[in-house]
Length: 433
Image (cartoon, rainbow, N blue to C red):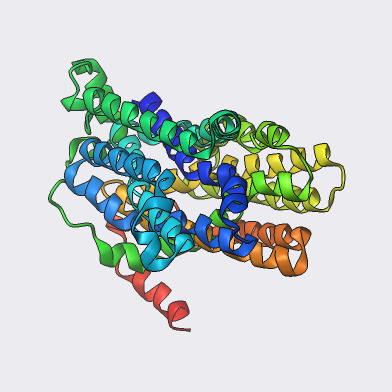
């Protein structure tokens, strides 16, 4: 099941990053400026951010298997439609740039279901001691998708053009949706290949999460929204998401336009941050679970985020100021790796805080992260245009440090579902100010 989730996550990053790779050909063909392209690239992230909560709620309500199947088909269809955007009637109504923005927005709507429902699957299929590892393995799909995308899309684009590369992405999505629908089940007891001993092991280690279906139950929104830990998690993920989307949207163009690499070199070096993710995300998830076992759930989760985001901020700033291309790329790639070293802990903490409604809480968190991601390509383009790329990357490093600092207020030992009423009072004062 985790292998399937990893493949789905890889597919999401193939489809969210492909426009960043073909973007320079679209710019050349249609004459879009840097800031216009930044708005187009942000369309996906806005749809992705706004529909996280509906997507996570749907997984809690109807089960992640059916929700993910429909979502993959949806975003694959609109990925194919991106190639046809210049021919759509929508172009005549709102203009070509706005039409690209709208189609990318709708891809984001579909992909919004992916990670909250993957997190829900981890909560149902894995025990308390494996939540960091479980989330890190499906998040490793980010690295796999990011590693393959620049090379695959560049290769297809150079030979058959940018439109064919998008059609190939859409076809892969249909294939993955079929495999998921035929093999997966939302809960382990529904799967024909899970035997009684395995089911007992999952239930005993996962506790009530595995044995208490939440279908039809309403998430405890008041508790989720009144918890100090919940808000710290949400706000910190906003700061975590901003630097990530520089790599998802601008990194390939940064290498080609700013660092002077060829398209082929950009496809090669553009994969470096995602190779770092493949290496660092599983390590971070494993260490998160080990730190919990050694230092307790609160300090264990906090320590991994502090290490990851501090290292990421330092490396990001160093890479921005390094003139040698090879060294700069390695530093920037390492910054991304340490960011994703910390990221599984965010998702594991969603399960710690709301074990029965992790889909809803992780969706709220990911909404915030992707609002940061929506602002990222727009603001990065503005800062880079007016103040230079070094300043743009320094600003991203500053937000990375803020993400780690906010974790002083996250306490993974306090389940939101069982939180006493005084939590709301503790948080009400700073919220009002």
